[in-house]
Image (cartoon, rainbow, N blue to C red; front, side, top):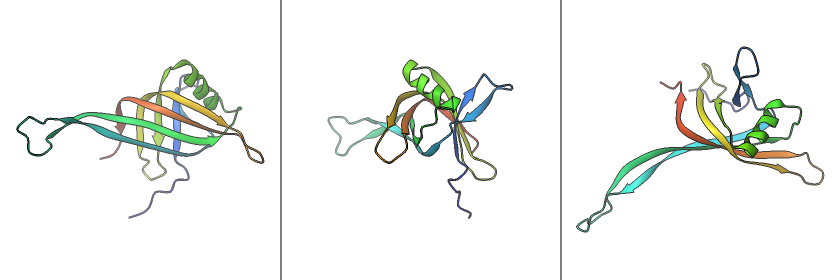
Length: 139
């Protein structure tokens, strides 16, 4: 089985200012992580002798990203603006495999930070909180 390389993976947001409308990559991203978890509901009674649990709602979590600050990238500026406004956007993650694995979801930027240090470049980090379901093309 072939390994999927990280080079070529993309975090993008839906852009209604281009024709036709399309997902556009957030330039300068160096890494990102995403994951989900399911809430656990306690179903214990006073007669329980071991913990009894049922599956709760799926929380699709968030996407955390890091990258180089690029003021010339319109999507970087849109992401900053989204953090300030709380506006929800449609997002897509694309892996570099063939055919490409994709995950699409709605989300809002809950934080966006700039980092500056001596003898370095300006970097950014942010978090997109996923709201609702994730659509994927996995079998």
